[in-house]
Length: 142
Image (cartoon, rainbow, N blue to C red; front, top):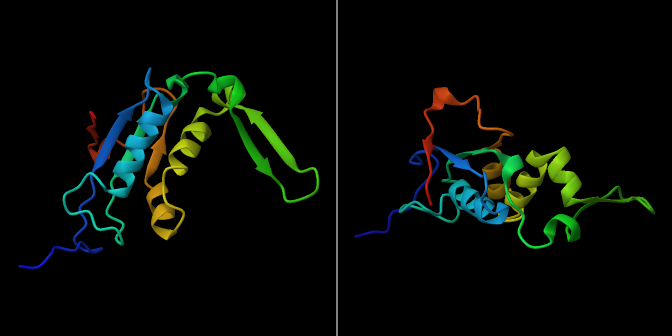
């Protein structure tokens, strides 16, 4: 008996909906990262992109626990001297909650070609409406 190894042709992708309303952002992002990588499947293969599509709803209602709203910063650097830009998470969540949630998921995905491919299957929405009804997504309860 040989071990089953998934490949690109045998991967079966599904669509899942995660509702972030009232839940900690990190917990929801971790669940999304597991679904995007495919680690919840019995035929998970580490070197194959076997993850599913994830739709995250109500990204603006995700909760940051503790003092993260005031103490956590999103930092970018242009590469030039003095090019550091900092944005407090309270401002980021008010202005662009989709970016905040995407960054949380991106930090939990490997930094390689499989991770970049997995992030293309993440869809984050503000509010509880999405435009992927044709894909017949399932609500994921973890």
